[in-house]
Image (cartoon, rainbow, N blue to C red):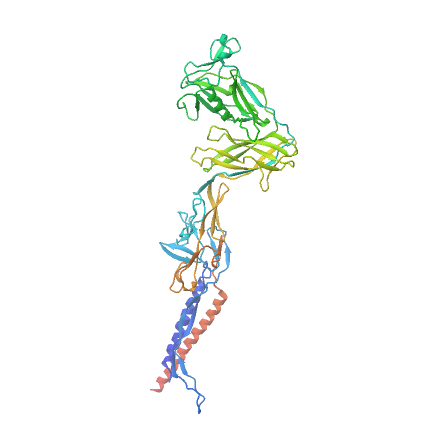
Length: 592
């Protein structure tokens, strides 16, 4: 008699092969899905009908095996292949391929999900998100662009909005100082005509000559000068508030030192950016600062500059060194009182020009807000050491210093008998800032770096240049790239690069236990275990490849073979049902 069991056995074969064909079809459909992991179905036999358990061998029988007839096939489960797919370069900065066993970590409304697909994009808030909108998670950076490895945060790449400036800290110089140059004998010397406190030319006597202590804030304390034609003109009028003196057009080594103003008053200045004082000595001290003159003795050497008074004359002595020569004209110093111009108070004449081997270079440094500041560095030959090299003195000056003082650095530089740098008494400059930037700002000067240095050898002339200075003005984030460790490096328009985040990854002890929730996303399953959250390259998570994507790991040739086998299995199961049906029909014919 035909068995009804064979019908159900064949039916189980039809069901099992149908479901396997579903799996194969899904794999083939996702052959071009980014980072898709192929799936396979595993069959298992169902319970068998036991006809007999068999017998053990004995004296009269060799024993018999169990007699069992299977009841069909069942679906034991599915297995996902998490082997890596091949890598395809895309050139898109937001694309990331993961080469290893890790998973990207994404957030969907507070739910943490995991993915192998690195096809990310930026949303309107500059977050990196999946195609379906889940935010990519990773580590943020602090204000100093150091990665904060702790709680995961959505990664943000603010192109076009993040700005950055960096304060200068180092300047490196190169060049050669002419060791056979002439030693300086004098700085430039300019002096004014004599000034007197009495308006009567007949009283132009030493007793009435102007002195540094003369107080010009007292009404009636006026200063007078012989006009050279038998008359007298008023140089400075006393009073409070009193005369405002403006210097403009004075050159130092052919370079304009800018415009500066001073007022004789005991109160606040009439206008911003005006220095104040009472006496001629106050004015002379101010002139010292804005002209960058110094008598400061450093290691036994002096540059000889300064402003003094002698016999009622104002004497301006420039620093030594030909490039420090001052050019002071009478018209460069003007005066006003109560808004009325009173001409040129000091008739100046040159008595000497600065000499001595010297060289000057200019460079730009930046404060913490990215504000550029020009600095002039001058080196002046000071001494020959017998069989022991040369000594030079450097002066650093800046018109952009927030303080009145023009000089921002002084020091000596010594070279040995072979012209090699030995030491410097000071290798930094200090600039005051009043614009909200970090103040004071200190910049180190490198006279002998790893690849660049200053030498002191005989030449026709000295030459000096700043070959490197760090720091930068404001820059805007324009591009970024993602490295194999997950670090996101941003490039700014000012040439700086900074780390702006790091991609985090997760590693599961059993990734096949993850639950597929669609859109290339997985969630933790009962048998997946909890992930190890870490950086790429740790714990076998693998490396990241920016500008690339992982392709599907579906093997089409294998899928087609499986499809043929599945089709054959389905047809064979249908034949079982067909044959059983024919036998049943024959049985029914016999009963008629």
